[in-house]
Length: 120
Image 1 (cartoon, rainbow, N blue to C red):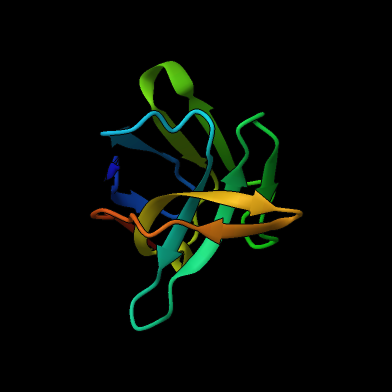
Image 2 (image 1 turned 60 degrees about the vertical axis):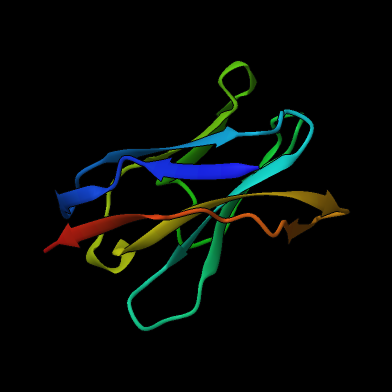
């Protein structure tokens, strides 16, 4: 599966962006999907996941501000980001994987990320 994240850019603090990730080469409707991000000089971190039944989960630092959703007909996962802060600046990646219980296991396909820069 190939993954392409789109929609990044420069935004002022308090603003919004909507990221899209299009999967090709495989039907991802039966997989869990996730968004990760990698801030400058830091490790990649999980942000949010969405199961095949559309059940979602978020890390505390984005809860209430970010919304993950999916459109299986378009093989696409979205990340709506509101109330952005400068510490949200990062390269954002999507991933297809699976849940085992409550834990998300990332797949090996990442693709190119999209850079989000939030200015103060």
